[in-house]
Image: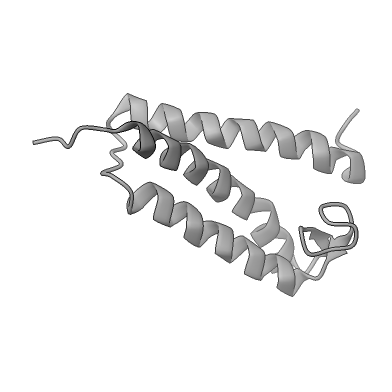
Length: 109
């Protein structure tokens, strides 16, 4: 029997998508040994942080995303609503990151 999805499950899945996609640039940059913007840089979100800081920040984002998606409610990849809410959160933060980080890395053509 499927558990009823409550509104706060959708909120958790939405923010889970935000955290999961936010982990990607930080982990990739960190693993490559490249500095990248982070909230811990000066100025926050604009200055560069070390690759180590980015790996740690990326892993924290991954852990929070996991907790929000897997541990709240019963996320089901077969339920369109669950995937759509997660996907909307992922898409919105990905577009925001593209615009924000694009100004530093030449992506805003």
